[in-house]
Image (cartoon, rainbow, N blue to C red; front, side, top):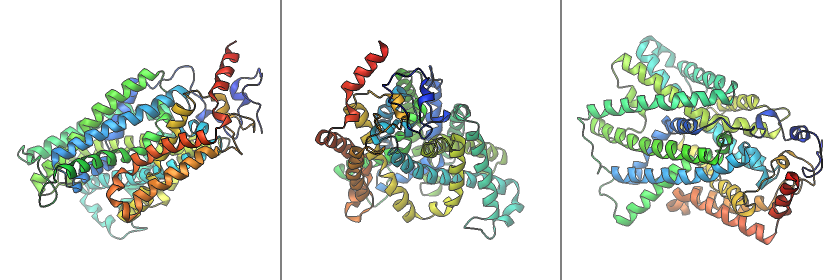
Length: 500
């Protein structure tokens, strides 16, 4: 059903004029006042950082040849880059007050926005499944410690997972699904609880590992026969920073899903400053400390904290540690990889797919991809997640450039829900060809850099290169072929007319 133009005189309430092809209550604009405040974003970032996957990614960067202190420096630089990018995307989301797939309609068109939304959903589903699997492995360690007889359930496998593995995986799967089924308010409460809780577990694991290491750390430890020379070391530090940024490129892209629920720009900035910078730097430093302490104990840096947990003899301490890590991983997984695809799938057909249904689709797909098999194959992870993940940079660049540079932060929210062919964001058949062209150029380059062997030396920089190219191509294309849907003067005049 086609809706009237938002500029037209209409006495109906806005949501009554929205197209059912583009609207449901779950993806509606924010109400009069948001309820995600500074503390909630602070706790959100606590939850976002503390996952088994992030720890593995951080400590695993030692393979770049960096010494311990150099890796810590690179990771902290990465945290600051994430802070800048999250402010750019988060403030925009708060101002417009709509979820990411709806926000993307301004730049890609009311139907074209499904392209960035689904690409983000694919990455999120894959990581959701992987993180759920990693959490289930931790739970399985606890089960085997408490109930040694369960060892018999680890014999044999179905689709690559043992019987006990299936029990633990489906248990974590159901817990997370139950959280999302309750809605965004429950997600906020889980984040508020899981965020502070995990610090107890992380500090306890760090102290326990340090004590076993005799409180000694070799900050000059490095992989390889000799430390890197100055300029190669600088390049590796920058590579570590951008790889960490790339690891959180998906959540950066869809940060509007959460900041849209904040009452002000100040809330977002303060939440990011306290939650992202403080938590991020602390997480990176603690991760490096644990990795270097494990080096003293085992003779090598341990990338997987599950290996450390399995070495704990005290069942009470083990139980507490595993519960904390399981809660933290579930919290991180929900906020980073579950909420986004739930909105993204709902955006495809809002009248048929609710936020809850989108979450169920996400959960089912997370089983279908058998994430344990995906995670065990570095080649698959690199080709699948590395390739699609490289597209997060160009998408962020295009959407940010369109909002800040092309539209000058002027967006008509009502038009985001209109499928009127004359609507501001309908463009041509619901898709903005300008953004598609910009994405084809910047995304193509980013994928080549991420996957092709000749570009292996600069592969860690695929995200920033893609983001910069996204900004540049968006600006250039819109100057070459100006878009009527982006005419700021018209939107300003409409706003004035509505106030009068």
